[in-house]
Image (cartoon, rainbow, N blue to C red; front, side, top):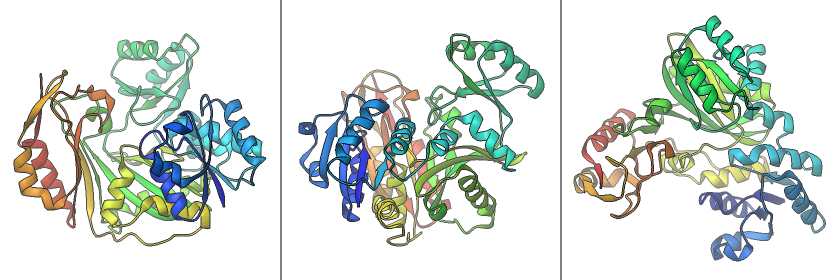
Length: 406
């Protein structure tokens, strides 16, 4: 099978998708923005051909590159795994007659108001929401639903550009910052109180082949705004627990309604006083290196499993479910340059056998702002067979290991 992989070199873990496809027996063709001479030898060895384009989100340039490839070989699949590339890949896929995620499905998975409207009509519980191109629409929604509200980009990933607003003044400020009234549109949603988590799948022809459930501690909006918090993302190995039945069923319904076929998915949800509520879904893998968490937790090559779904339409192996595994982000105490670490030796002495990966930038490294994300500065991945013990260990790490900056 000949598979085009969009942008195999950036971000860095994209190379794992190329490796997975190659190990599953695909002939991997890369289309990316870097010159072929900038690909490292190992990545280049997994590719049978490479095309450079000015931008992989320039649909004309991407289609022209695909057409050049199609003149050489039959293209069986065209795959993109980065949120920003999903729509352009779907558009080109349809134009070039290549099977895979449709433009309709890609749009429903990317445009949040349209996504929620389709799911509400299908009976999936969602927060109340609208799209707003002007302040009057947003203020009328606020008057009807009440504060707090969430204002977020119609398309995007994670909490980027997302703001909670608690009154009309904050709403107006959020709309202005997002460009509403100057040709931009945003999603305005009811704020849902409760615990925030996500469920990720690899689906084959609309059926879930692999699934993984993770939790945020605390929720993303708080984690991405507060420096003093060492936020955690924790994948559980207790998927058969009764409390997860509803979210697993909802995931399957969402996949059906949105027409997702063979693809990775990433679905966020809330559970609180109003029950389980769908938040949003991406027709792609999760970010923040979460697939590496799943690989460590389940002792298998998840990138190859994704490739097996794409290339062969089946699973290659089963996850062990032996471990729960999580990542804890460690923020510098101020902006500047990292000057050192307190408590690192104690943490590695106490938990070293369970730590599967870590990133502690050396002194002198410029810090990144809290808003840059979970992996922007220091972080540790750790696993343990017992979920509750893992949570306790991660809490201790957050309380003990401090990143100092000056």
